[in-house]
Image 1 (cartoon, rainbow, N blue to C red):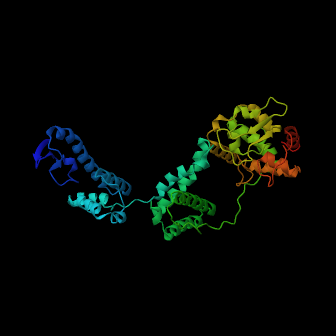
Image 2: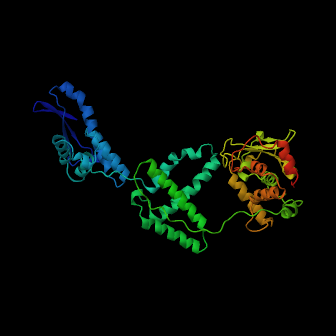
Image 3: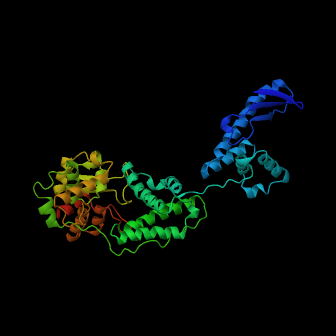
Length: 423
């Protein structure tokens, strides 16, 4: 590093490191320190050199094809040069002297370095839009209110179909910026789904769920980020006339097959207890998996379980409820009085395990039956027993369709009702 006095001002003279050759065409630079005092010049030289290096680093960062990095580098380089980054149309509106100052800054360099400089000080860097994958990342933050109270397992299962839908879209049309998504892109995506449906590899409902998740994610980002875009996301759904509900197990099948001696002996204990507990409670499998030891109350006048939103999110606001235990369900909970730690964080694994066991052992009444069919069976048995609608909905965790008045039936009354048709 040299200090040379020229025209009554000390100048810092230093060779340009090879690293900065792509953005600095000179082999040696002269930097005015604006002082004729050598002492002051020696004090100012290190920061002046650091300022030069900072500018070169920002320029290097701008020499990239990555739109986001290039835009960030342009803003940084503009700041290093002492300017705030402005779009080109706003630069053009600056007072003449300020505009010329920026132009002169860009004209000091040649080649690629001049182009990078111009993008920074003259506003030539295009602000990157939000890509489809970036929109998904942004959506996780915007949708936090939808995930409050979910357990890790619930959060994973909530995220998975949304991640899959976005991955399917990107595979079809590429990771485009949202502003570049065209109507043809979405029609191509729909055609791909249509071919899969026609080949029997997918159901209309599966495609429609993809469209639903994609629409919700992208529209949420457009709205909350005030992008002002109208995306071509309407009119994509396939008609799906077939209503697919799980058929209930018949009482005869439950008695002679599921409750036959030894029929469930080879199923792991926790899965078996959840299945048997479901017969006379009709709870959702995930609700059973989430039960903790203090939710299972056996040493009381009316043994019962309490479905609560503790450590997880329940289906809806009427899902929290108390269900008496009777018959085979009571005996099952006596075997698992502390709950089901094996499935506490993986209720999806529970359904897969039970359904696989039932299928392999010929215990499904039809191919359409699943573990969830026991919930439907419980409801049918309540209807057949002419159970009051308020009690049915309270036990099942369903909305009443009108405001609930009073406390409803007592726990003992509910126990007696269930006992009348229990297995």
